[in-house]
Structure formats: structure tokens, C-alpha cells
Amino acid sequence: MKFLRYLLFPFSVLYGCIMSIRNFLYNCNILQSKSYPVPVICVGNLSTGGTGKSPMIELLVRTLKDKYQLATLSRGYKRTTDGFLEVQPNHRSSEVGDEPLQFKINFPEITVAVDANRQRGISELLKKHPQLDLILLDDAFQHRKVKPSLSILLTTYNDLYTRDFILPTGNLREFQTGARRAQLIIVTKCPATLSKGEQNNLRQQLKPKPYQHLLFSAILYSDFVISKTEREKLASFNDFTLVTGIANPKPLLSHLKLLDKNFEHIQFSDHHEFSESDLELLQKKSKLLTTQKDFMRLKSKLKTDQLFYIPIETQILNQPEFLKTYLEEALF
Image (cartoon, rainbow, N blue to C red; front, side, top):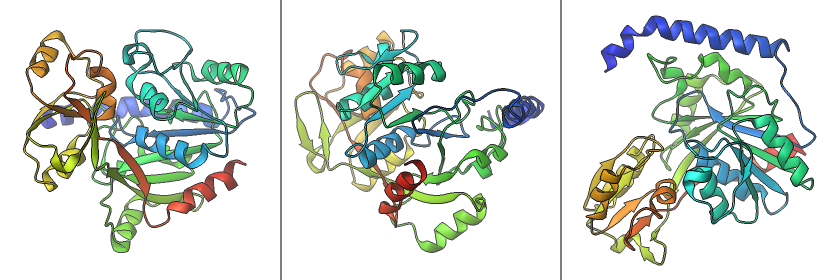
């Protein structure tokens, strides 16, 4: 597969040039980006996925929700509905997308909406909720039709965008120079014990511009697993089947192995649509563990009370208070 991707290198150059021309037209205001009367934070990446956008959105919500009226706007990947839709806790993931549903269930007090047309989505949010102080755009770094007040670019510790190349040879959606649009770069999924020396090494690889802040974050896993009806200590949870439909399950696998858990792993692609045969296979398992994102899609399809998920949170390393201070100074 890797050899095939190298053979496709000419297509990568062509695709990258097309994206560069598009960005040039937006940078020169030949193609127009629209601004809005409330701050808009864009969270995204250069790669095709797996950088931890959902946990980062949730970190931003936790950081700001007590002081400001927030809304999140996502496209609602693979949903069966069209246009603008405000997410409710009783929606199915197939109607609104798994990640927006997760946002609404975890933070019922905020407004969550989906719309592939980000301009229309923001306009609808402001019309329906004029009291909003801030809008968070999920996975929108390449959506240049909206001019964000702040762009946050995510890249993973084990797969920095500086080590990658553009599609289809690599996994980047645009050339590395696109990172210049970000005011804040966050290296995600770092070891919780990341040293100052390792941070400096990453900084040298990423070479942030003088106007860019560089932060480092780690994933924290809960000590509990949760089902529709139960909450069980992870320490006593064993002999299960791990089901993942996310872009990068390696950190979760490493965490469970570090805890010396006994499990088998069934891996699907990111945002996998579970077929009848998939569900039949999973239904035969006595105990299942999954991510919350996958739980959103599986909970209504499997007839079992033994489907659990492990909650996660993103934490900024070394200077956790910096994020709140920086956001408030930059936006308000």
C-alpha cells in the first residue's frame, strides 16, 4: 500500500497545487471569506483525521461555558439529514453525526448544530440564538468561506504534519504552509510525562511563527467505564472485546495494555457504518468496550446492556491556565 501511495506522487503535487491556488485566492480576497459579529474559533488539522478534534472542542467548551454562551457547529459527517439542524439529546447519531451528538449529551446546556454550509450554519445559529457569545467550528480549517477570529491547528505527537506529505501520497489535506493560518498550534496525544527537552525538540520540528503559540496536550482516560445503565470501575473491568471505529485507536490500546487488560480488539475505519453482519458479530460478544463516539452509533443498534465506553478528556500540559487566559484576551 505504501509503494502504491508513492506511485501516486504526481497526483499529490497536482492536488497540492490546486489547494494552494485556492488558498492564494482567499488570501488575496479574490474569493471572499465572511466575518461575523461574534467570535468564531476554528478547530482543525492539516491531516485527514485522528488528531483529537472532538476532545479539543470539549476542552474549549469546559474552559469557557461557565462564563459565555457557546455553540458548536459541525458538518455532521455521514448523517442522513440535510441542511441546518440543531442537535437534541434524543437524536440518533445517523441523523446528526456521532460527534455532535456526543457534544450535546456531554454538555446539554450549550447549543449544538450541524450544517455542511458553515456560513448558513452560523447565520442560523445567530438568528435562533442572538445571545450567543462564541461559536466553535469543528473540523473547519480548510473551510475558507468563514473567516475565523481564531484558528487552532492540531497535530499529533506521533505524526506531526511536518513529517507528512499531501494526499494521496501522504495524509495532508493541503501543503504544510497552510499551518501559517493558525494562531495556536497544539500537539495532541502527547505522553503525560512529556519533558521540556521533548517539547523543545517538537518546537524545532514545527518551527512556529513568532505570532503562533505552541501548546502540548495529553489524553486522560477515566477510571470508570459507562453503559446505558451502569458505571463500573475500569480496574475491575476485564475479559472484554474492544470495538473501535476511530482514525487512531493506538493510544487507547496502549492505555489498556498498560493496565494489563485482557481483551480482543475489533477495529473498523473512522466513522464506520456498522452493517448487519458487523452487528451480528458484536452481538455475540459477552462484554464490549468502545469509545464514546462509537457508543453514539452502537447504543441504539445493539440489544445488550454490556456495551460500555471509556470517557476521555484532553488536558493542556505544563500550563493548563494559559488556554483560558489566551482565549479571553484574544477574543473578548
